[in-house]
Image (cartoon, rainbow, N blue to C red; front, side, top):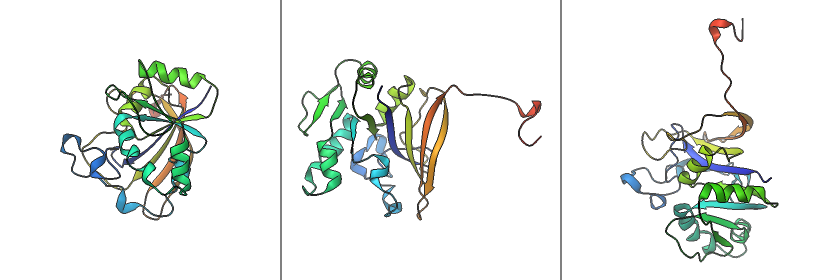
Length: 208
């Protein structure tokens, strides 16, 4: 079975809306589009997050697809990240799009959870969600996401679409890697380990 990885940027309070620019998602009059830009430096390697699509197949929601569709094909043909992203197979979850113009793009048909579960069961490269908050919500609630690559930026936004909303399915994660950039961005990778374990310090715990 193929692994499903979700890659995203969030503020310290968990907002993931429009990190790269206001045009990405102005819903609900979001005032802070582009909040990630001031913290970008050479340590934020897109290849580490799998953002460029190399050796993976990509899952995108409609809005993220349309942002990417207007960006990656416009880069120079010799840009290695653009070559990888344009060449990768891209699956798109949309109720409104009927056709897709970006090369190697495929519309997911029917129920998105069932469609992604079927993709995971096929042989091939791992699957990767990039951005696509609504899609993450649906697939997380169905426990289909195996790994999270989360870049946490040192900013508090207070409002906006969040990585995990009220529909979140409680689960335990294990941190497998982390590092920080000079600008304070913490880049962490987590894997799902199942149900949450609970206990009580009143019954004795670490340090007793």
